[in-house]
Amino acid sequence: MMKQFETVIGLEVHVELATKTKIFCSCSTEFGGEPNSHTCPVCTGMPGSLPVLNKKVVEYAVAVGLATNCKITQNCKFDRKNYFYPDNPQNYQISQLYLPICRDG
Image (cartoon, rainbow, N blue to C red; front, side, top):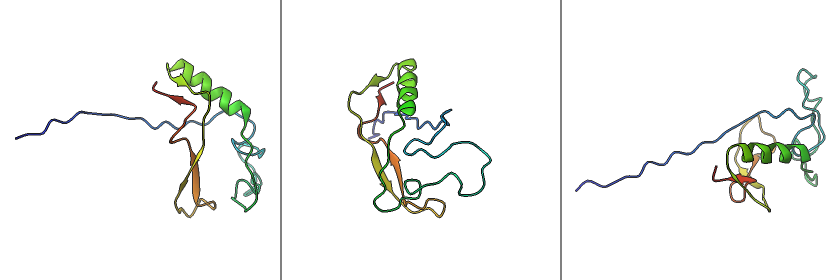
């Protein structure tokens, strides 16, 4: 007997936002700086450093969500995905797996 399968397709979209600072700190996003000149304790995952969310990034996310008919959540949450990559000194990536700003678009 042949099993029936349902096709489910998901998209993971990455964009580079036109902000002057990074999403979780006040470091510049300007291209072409000297190596390590746009880093801080938050960027490098130093113990005790706390991120501060860039308001402009949230505004851009909401605008894209509205343009793509997403539901915009009132309370979002950021999650850590732990893994090791040589170019990632934090050994984690911040994502929005469980309560993203936009969903169902």
